[in-house]
Amino acid sequence: MARGRRIEPIRHIPLLLLGLALIGCQPAARQELATLRPTPSASARAASPSTSTGPSPSAAAGDVVIEKFVDLVTAGDFSYRARLTGTASGSADTLTVSGSIDVSDVNYSLVVNWKFPRSDSYRVDVRRVGDRVWSRGTGSGWQEIKGFLDEDSNSPFAFVESASDVELVEPVKVDGKQRYKVSIDGARIVDPSYIPAVNLSAESTRKTTFELLLDTAGRPVSGSWRLTGAGRVSGQLQEIAIRLELAFSKVGQPITIRRP
Image 1 (cartoon, rainbow, N blue to C red):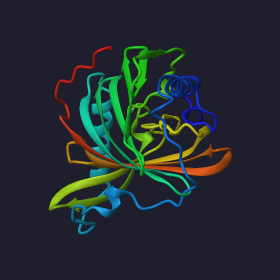
Image 2: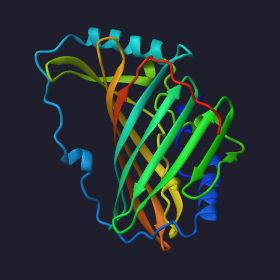
Image 3: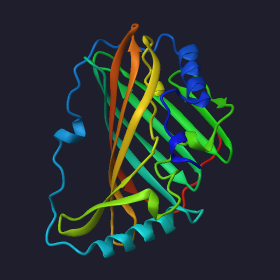
């Protein structure tokens, strides 16, 4: 699969259908955005683990860790849970984002909670089992997304196929433990079309970045995912930025993803 197809300025059909489903099923729940000034994410303001970069192992040790990571995520039975915390901002409002994703091979269950500054939280669920995908919003039932493509996957490591898809950033010590910071291109965890704002339209993704901390066995420990995009808020074109921090658990433990 060509990397250029993974992220495009125009959303794929499944994401558009999800947005339409949310609009149709929860007109009273969706809120309006104001014009925004981006603010630091809650996770960025929170205390972070102590990190240092020296002295560090050789780059060859990092390459070995990347190979272990690739072996894990391409084995066909890799499973884990990741807790999601962060923000979504435009030019004036900042929404608090929380949720989780459970993954077992290609199957996953994604939960995203969006907290508006002046309102309650609204939830979006996306679930994949095999080649079938369903979604629902607050106050609505599950609806199957037709025409889903593998490149639309919300699974963080869906596009990792070989070591060439993972770049070593640097070895680091985190709270005295050896870790390896790597970057992954193309991860599509949350799409701007999932933001349940009634006056938001024409959402698009321009770029995503994903930095990940691996332990010496190649297992994911934590990650920082960033999306930059755009959308029209009450007709006005604005930047959209989504920032997520991921904390991994149950890595390698059995996780069952069931269809709705």
